[in-house]
Length: 262
Image (cartoon, rainbow, N blue to C red):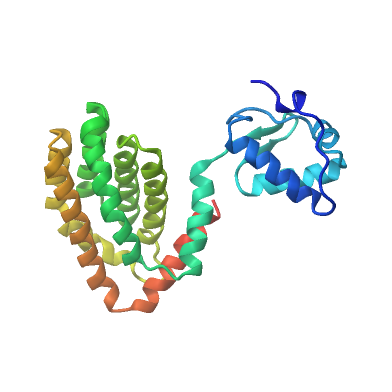
């Protein structure tokens, strides 16, 4: 890969907030692909020379880029571009959940059309092995013996389904929502965790029909059954949460905090 610094004239920054300006410039170059994921940034000294600032200022900018998961400093080897899309999205979306007091039912409202579209695309674009993987995860929910196993199977099912859509945006959002849901499923502090087992048990037949439709690439059936599965889930969860709305809000807040902290 061509090093942009070797082909650009040194940048003269505006007065004040030099580190912030460097963050913005390097972020733009990373997002535009001038520094590809996995590549190593120039050394701190080279960056300092390019931006005509001190090394500590460059170091401050690197810390800012690392905080938003664009780069990672590796001891003894340098700073590498990670551009971790899932982590970047999770940081922003989890903050919105907390700030706007988003509820679990709101998450499920987003899930329904997203997974329905994922199922439609998967039937057309996924390999047989990918579709069988989705079906296997659905079936594993029936065998889950505790809340932890349920949460893991739920996350794997959602991840496999959205990945099988071969749509990057759907996959990124879906994996984030899966992370939020698994944190909710496994939250025991307020007593909601124990209530998920009967909810999942009631959804067993929905899962089996959906798994069959996906494997056989029945697009319309897969779309309809995904919609039914999510609506049935929403109805069961709604009945569970109605008894104690305050506890449901606390669970959502904790789930968002845990996902953002990863």
